[in-house]
Image (tube, rainbow, N blue to C red; front, side):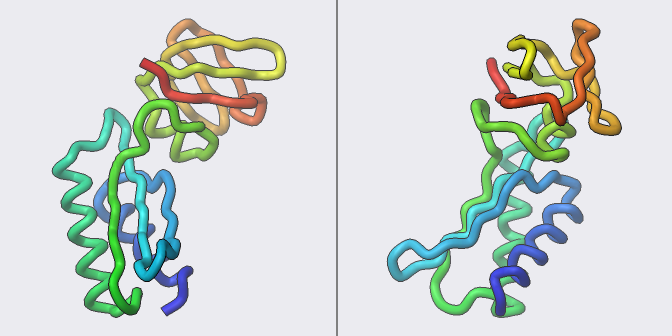
Length: 139
């Protein structure tokens, strides 16, 4: 099956599990294909949740024969320090401390809310996510 079919099934499985799909990548490494899936949720995803979604993805790929031949499946959380840019990034990072850079300033603050493209921080600062040049989760 096509690359897009694999990714479509992964998106469905992750959504059904109640997690947010952060990133997915299917690529060739030598003779083996690797499917890397990053998942998260508000409050942080746990190891058991990663393992459960990994089993569901593996079962679906094998049952529907979506990937021919040997492949490696890697399911994990994105971790701290990854560049934030998508709506799912903002949703999953509510309650987390972020380093933010806009055209006019740089600051570190806890994201209190994300709604309709607006980022609201615990210190009362509000910015449109379109104004964010870079953002990363920090400790």
